[in-house]
Image 1 (tube, rainbow, N blue to C red):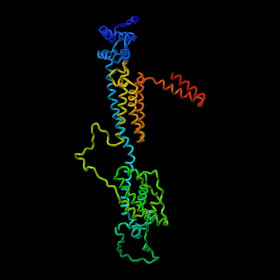
Image 2 (image 1 turned 60 degrees about the vertical axis):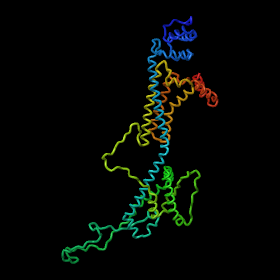
Image 3 (image 1 turned 45 degrees about the vertical axis):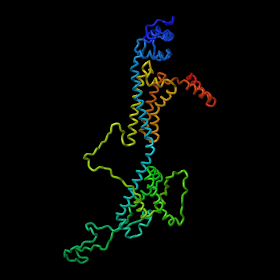
Image 4 (image 1 turned 180 degrees about the horizontal axis):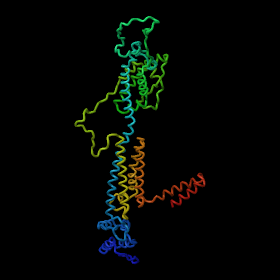
Length: 472
């Protein structure tokens, strides 16, 4: 039955359905009266939820598909069906965004070990370059000349060989053997000294010598110094068990070759550094530039260059007949780590913007959140709302993790854009007070500043009062 003091209103579909039900079952008359008393001219669906307390009655009313948003008295321009469709699209976009975030989380360990992969690549390049530099030295003319004059050249240290000056005689041009070719006299008569046309004889037994260093020795010095990097060797050992063992053997070999000359060159005194207690188990110490050059002989360098030399496998196909120059698999990310991460973050940014656009479409209805949708399911309790808010922040957390381990400016820009897109979604939902009121936060901040007002001075006291007023 209707309340006697209620204002006459045009018949409403929800109210008519409830009144018809009350005529058959008088116990629903109270529900009809409560709904009639709360009708100021527009009935949003959440008001029906609050007024109609009986679950079965509420299910019966909603099953009649009463479209309150299409009612002329309701100012909403978006029907319930459109809000439901927009919410379903948001559910799919949110699920895809979480999958992309999971993919970004799985890339974080690869970014953490990327420095070790780069260190191993540099180590292999330096080892191969050292072997090539030794081969270049073996073919050097100055080195061959010096070895002929000094048979003990291989037993000299690198520091001594850097100071070596090699004197050589250039080969005359036009004579591949360097021997002077015999000249045939034209039978001219010798002119007496002082007579007209007299020419002095050219000087004989003259030799031209050139003094130079062994230029091929300097690249070997540079490579030995670069290989004496503890960070390079330690990080390279972390890549795999194979390289851990290989570099360990190479470092032991280097120490053995260096220790052969440490005693004689230092006057019989062997200096040993104290081990670092904080160093990792696979730490490879550095000797320093001077000890390496002063104690490592050329014979030791040749032996060290060929010991545990990394082997390269050639996977290049010769010829292009039948070869796939471009391989694109649907649904797969690029092969390189940087390109895959960049592609995933760009796609994640688009999905978040897509989610925000349809969330704005869903919140444009007066019925938001419509029953049976994603937003209505999470709005049932504060716990589910908290889970929903955390799920919205997961893409930003994944992007921040990638930024911290990669330290690339491209990911900084994408992280800022993803953060702005997520903040926009929160603002769109909060227009409908989806997450509740946050005035208590301002009140707590105001109380915090009020307790410290005596220490912060008059300016802070005024700010605390303003914050308290805002919280109230």
